[in-house]
Image (cartoon, rainbow, N blue to C red; front, side, top):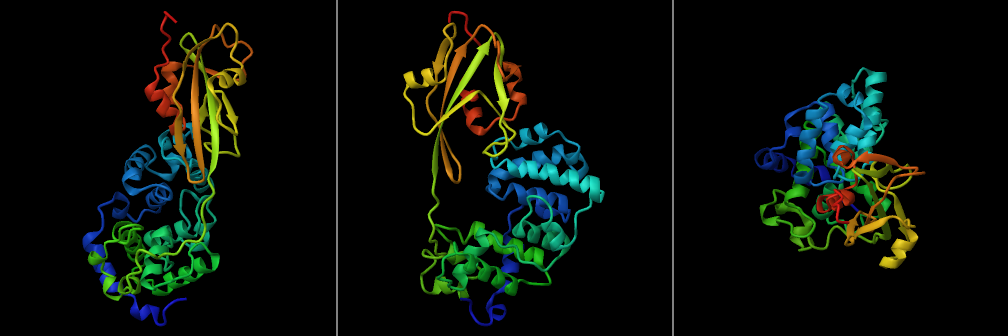
Length: 356
């Protein structure tokens, strides 16, 4: 699967020289602090750099040390994470910070194996932290690295297959510049993120192009090979936004589903889209309640799910016999909601107009 003599053919010097002159100016590249590198890597796991950068800056400003994060309230952590998605990342950060503070005096493990034992830290993240913060000679292999090496070495096997992933990981460790593992890992990832992109690779500007097998055979638009198609689940959410005076009902989402620990309005979920009479009937709107508005449909796309949501805004006399929490509408901004609900709140004023 891999080329013979990979170490001798991979242009590490050209790659590192390119990285030194062309790398993006990013704050986590200005430090060897494992805490800040950890924060940046977790944020960037499912997030583009341009989107993740302001979150990183706010996060380290609010929690500049492991101790600060460990002592924070989960709601405050989730609120800062609001809008990034994949909220298990934030909960794992909080859990691990408390573990490091309580059991290891806020000191990160300085071995690959030790880093792997931290919650939310997998092989890629452990290698990234280890190589950058501690100089560990371990290749950090993410989607960018799979793409760069698949193209450079003309790997025609599907990178969706476990055997191919193992082979490319071995190859990445073989070509790793052991003297500068942190810079090497960042250089390959930077190359994949900026020049060796999925759709329109900039091969003419690439420091690897002179010896890249895919470029030589015009296969850069074919590689890497993908064989699996992600199955996407559709879900239909109908939220009941019940107002009594200047208060509204909310609840915290439980474990075992998306958005765990975030807040939402009372929810009805169905397997198919409902029309307006069906929505009102299924939500069991009370006889004395007044329907103020049925929102447009909001669409929210996750990696394996598509959420279609509507909001029914209702004026009620009271919250009698409710199992939900009532809060002042002006305080909603203090709670961490999924981006889907925040999009609704940005469009909808929750102040009751008396003529209703």
